[in-house]
Length: 169
Length: 272
Ligand SMILES: Cc1cc2nc3c(=O)[nH]c(=O)nc-3n(C[C@H](O)[C@H](O)[C@H](O)COP(=O)(O)OP(=O)(O)OC[C@H]3O[C@@H](n4cnc5c(N)ncnc54)[C@H](O)[C@@H]3O)c2cc1C
Ligand code: FES
Ligand code: FES
Image 1 (cartoon, helix red, strand yellow):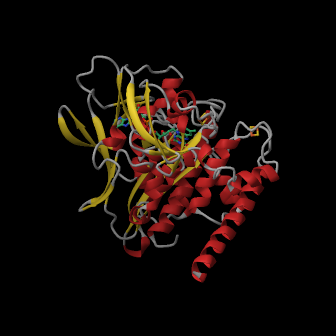
Image 2: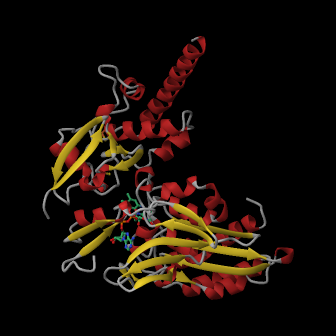
């Protein structure tokens, strides 16, 4: 199969690449675009280390073809921090020691971000269900769950402060 | 599709296809992504019920309140597939056409008497879901055929459905056995119509008319449920593997069917 030219948006930037018809979005991100945050743990949808958002929807980039993302919007872990300012999830992962080897971390961060966007105050079991597609061999999960819980609180407080400022005009 | 001389595959969510490509089980010469076909990612309410486009990811089914309240069993079954990551991509049509005996949405669709709308070189036709799969990994679809939608009927009053599977883990696991039940009640909450389908206990999902007959005319009294379970056990011809022995699968299939019947019954009489 011949190369396919694709134009898409990654973390807000317009990008173009040429990929083989069999290459996955994960291959494209890592090998063509130099975005090595998303990791390949399994390549079969089981581990979630390759998680990204595709038009706002959490997906395994190893199960998306590069050719499918024409005209779509992709968000990766590289887009989470605001310059040098880490996203609350990233901060809390560090504070809670929610990572050891770190291979699973980008996937957990993106999946947790997707969760908090639709549910700003998840219970522990909601967090565990939402992250069931992400595997970690090192931490035993508890620290990850606590970090997500703490970050959810941070985000709610940020939101409140923003509303107050708006109201105050 | 029909013109391709080599091996052509349709791509819906890709959660089976890409895994099989990567495992070198298949080596496509042509892949056709159906998701760009206009309307294929829509759920439509029609005069006769619902038409769910072949590209609709399972996560979308639960967000459609009308669909989820008419067919809670179908929606729950589809939403058991994989993780949130998989839900954002996987489709019921892919689940059906992949033709795994353990496909979660299929027993619920068969119980629901769903139809697959197939478009091919021979035109457009409606195929009962139970006639699509002919064996593990095999379907009755011909070269060039595309399933474009799944159709679910409008529900008469006092109807309910349910799907239950047995898995060792609660998430991210493959059904060891499963059951889908759909019921419509008449006067005095007596079962008027029933359909019962079992998954993962035979080469294909099986419709068990005898199990359905055990429920018709009853209010799901204990002996009706025992007869249902016996009919389900008799319909099982499972494989034995590390996930479950033949005896285990057979017995638990009966238990799943009983529990799913009770859930469907409670839903039909408005008790959730
Ligand atoms: C981590 C993980 C967990 C999973 N968990 C479950 C689970 O719990 N339960 C379960 O049942 N499954 C599970 N699966 C399997 C898979 O996700 C489902 O079978 C899913 O529904 C497939 O849908 P899809 O749209 O991704 O199919 P695809 O991979 O796109 O297609 C599957 C097959 O159908 C064919 N096809 C696609 N569209 C059409 C069409 N319109 N007409 C005709 N043929 C078509 C394809 O060519 C292919 O052969 C899991 C998979 C993964 C990777
Ligand atoms: S690499 Fe994609 S899920 Fe494991
Ligand atoms: S930190 Fe090593 S896999 Fe999660």
